[in-house]
Length: 384
Image (cartoon, rainbow, N blue to C red; front, side, top):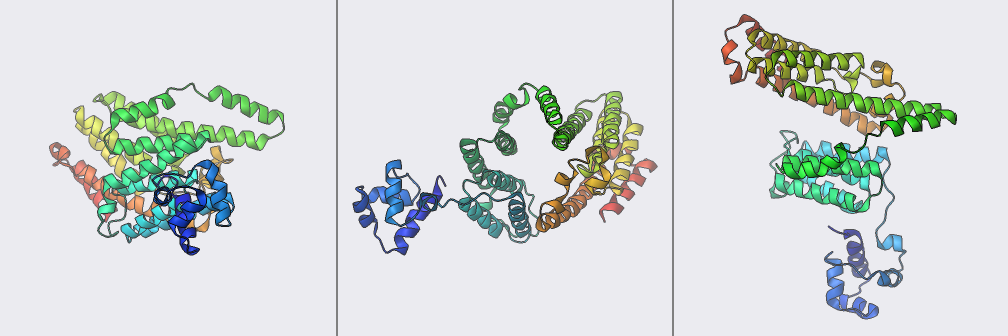
């Protein structure tokens, strides 16, 4: 797909004007084989030839490269939501459309990262169950290869640090899905272990306040706090389930839930309390604390029963200056509709997964415990 835009433009213009490859080659002083390779995307014209090619077809250089302005956040969100919705009914058609959008917007770095993330989710089986039978083109390895191609394009061409960071993380996610763990380590280790940017953030915030730009300072500080809080949640969750020490697992789980509740992070991660409780239950079961394990299972089911997605502005007072960023209605109606449907589907999947987790064979030792049976009944009621 490399530089497909210029290849496609040359081929289209030549056909539309009734020009043969031989005629174009003769005009430019190159071989017919060279023109053929350009149109197939196998090579590119010499840079010195580009103005002559553009002039021959009465194009500007921008038109020759099929350049288009990058989509706004709302436009990109609408594209993503539309393709995502189409995949729920016809994955092959949605896949074909995604790749067409990628070819048309081959230099829209942010959009390419978004589309690559969607390809990765499809490869993991996250298209809806009634999305139709995937074709050969939708095999996981093919989808992941296409995701890598889009992300490598961004990593090679983009310059914005935030975009490069996002593309690197997305590529690491695709590699992790493929089981290429050493490659994931090599890719992420330099990012994770780089010097903390906290001091620079504080200095920038102070400078913004000193120049009267208080709102920008608020947004900067709250955005960093929100990122740090969600990172802390993830780090603590992983530690809850890592060991077999019942005391540590319970204490870590309680602390994680305390952070979540005190900072009002329900709008960002509504299923976090249930997930933490499940991890704690598993850790206590492995440690031989059956009573504690069943109690945490009950807390997981109780949390799932109250899962909601509250309005960020109303439910996150500590992050009021960045709440609009979390409100899909501020992006576009299409994006808001997509996020609402996504949240509903995620809640259904989470509750189905909860039943599977609660009724797994690993809980056979407590199968006769009345408290355990009560937890199972409640979980099954939620899923149904």
